[in-house]
Length: 402
Image (cartoon, rainbow, N blue to C red):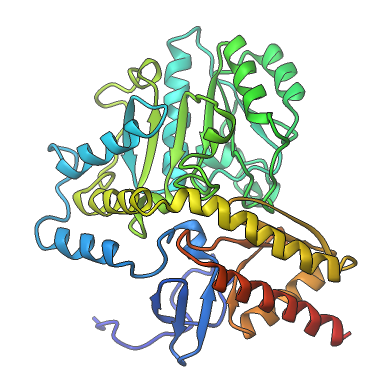
């Protein structure tokens, strides 16, 4: 048997499930990454909204090194001290009464759907779930069934039955459908990230919450990407003073370690009884220990409020760029530090993306024409100014090249 020590920089033996950039990162610090060639990049992807404290934050590295010297994994056959602490932090700072821990966003959504259906089974046998067009909730079969983007669903039929879709941002459509099918739950993203940073109209979540209350339907909010301070509130639902029944969390929760969670009220959580759901690795001592350090650091350093302030600043600067290139930049939108720059067409966007990478700025190209920008919450105005300069420079280079 070969040892596997042969270097394979382009992933010769990996399944081709990702369109990777031909870059191998070697180290990171704060908002910055360095590749194996020594090139430096301003990283405004944060591992897809995971590294909210940037790379190698001392509180994260200290929490990891401290915990691995004591205990990494036991499984949920035993009480886990860090899990108890993290659940108390989450409950104390949210609507929730109870928490279930898992490893990822798709598992958090999967657990949320299972919990809603378990509640529905014991409340008249309701099982239908209303989701929205353009939604992205994950890649396991339950989460994929709730995902309203055909490109992710294609080739995996038949998916789970009982999922129905309405236009995002249209509460009247949800009200009509709820009256027709008597669902157990509505599942929504407070901001659609994968769909190009789509921010709903003001009052949308509150209207949906009212509809759910009147129709005895659970409200599930997928805060996997926008929770943990990303929008300028610890949870995005706080912007509209909404109290959901279930929230799915992951990504930034673990500070870079795989950690997901399902948050729920007592009335809903009681339907998850022993054996109804589980996770071997979910909430292990290492992941939950790092998550505790992550949230405590964010709260202590006021990074949540700061994300809202920096987001407003960033949006303002980007709108100045839009004013210079109105025929190429179709829209600037966002909430806190999840920001979308929409270009006129996919070809122009792809060219700008390639030039941005060359110029040392990392963002995510989504729906083929939108830069999804996800800075760490502890970035600063100087780094934001640099990002704006590099975006403007990339646009100018593409325009000049014809």
